[in-house]
Image 1: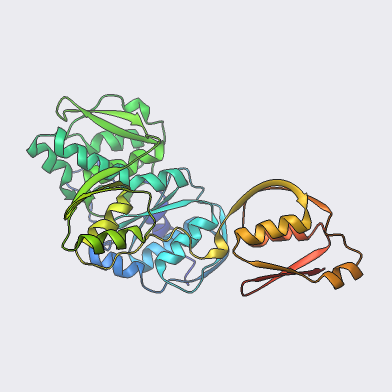
Image 2: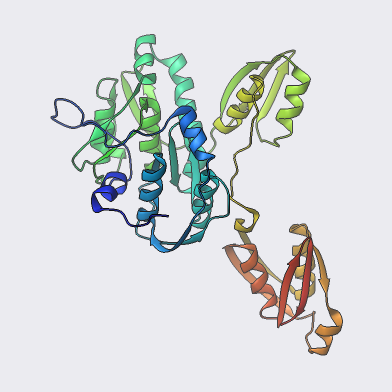
Length: 379
């Protein structure tokens, strides 16, 4: 995998961590240096092979390389440290699995829209698509038709000089309305960048989420008030399906937290944008899939604070991990190791391997996972 890029390429992809705006004072936008993939091309690329290994490589180089090679728009939240070193080997799989694995390795969240991949704080990543969907739903009821059409129109925006995000937000909506409290966007400076084509609602959502903000419309859309992100986000949509029983069974199989109400063939679903995508695919007779939160089981993180004898602790943990613990008691006794030794554990967001090691290590033990068996022997 190519890891060395020219400085100009790095500047193109990563020198600004967010959004694309208009070029102040320019007669027309600069022609984008790359055509980002969208729609089916974007979806197909995410499912193409994308594994790789990085050893102490700056994150900005990794992202720049992936964006350039695959022509997908990768948007890192302003709060992500681009200079941090990535030491990660992706499992064999798709580009999407690799991206999700990198995000999980860095304890970040990831969200995938139509033509963009956002990586940032987990709470922001979890909400971004639904926040955009909520604004779209609000536009349907709160905005006049002509203004609503303008907000939904897809366009490309480019800026060539460093810009404060407050100025970018105001330029983005300058023909759509007025932000009444732009000071809610703290001062920052973003380097030149261009975004793929997307509606203004989506662009502004992606900009503001990096400040934990969204907005509400006032005076029939003439004014926008920036407001903090809500604690809970959801959107409600209705679907008319051909086979209600089949739809209900398939949707239930995804084990989502969405609220479902139905009357005959009409289903009203309240949930996240990701939930709605699954419902829409099923209603259209397409194959739906649940978003993979983590690249593979080994990347799952654990937080635990407890004080227990090592035997009881391992037995309880094995149950949680869906494993059957087996102690080599003869060898353990011969090594003069007591399974009644208390282990005080206080870990935060560690992997399964780190968790088990922190338990067995102080007790003079070691572990090995063989299929569904957790084998404990003397170290």
